[in-house]
Amino acid sequence: MDANRNEATYVKAGHRTVANFTGQGDWRTRWPHATLSFGDFVADEFGRAMAGLGYSYSGLASTKLIVNNKNVPLYRLAFFSKHPLGAKFWDECRKYTNPQTSLFS
Image (cartoon, rainbow, N blue to C red; front, side, top):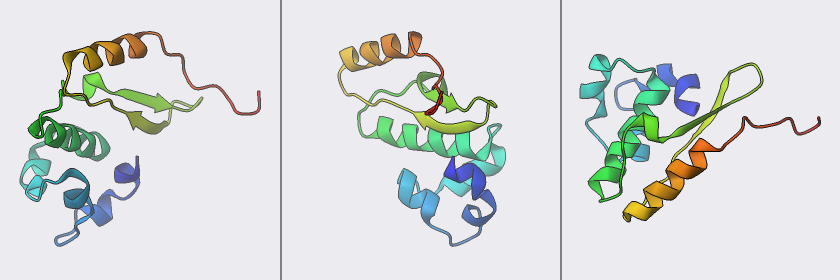
């Protein structure tokens, strides 16, 4: 979610945070054509970079967005595995998750 809050800083020429995080120095060539929010774009770039290293990645739909009780995104969870069984376990976990509960209910 840091990318959403700091988009104006990160898209400036010469700023290296996104390139360092994703390992994709050429991400700026794809960003103007993206149909995603900046945060989703950065998360997807990271996932694609992991796929380039041999980990399974099926796009943002294979991640889990965690939101607060006002539906504001807090963070995105992703699982990367080189073995197909890891992806199967992750899909099963995502099916049975509940929204995060309050710390002081």
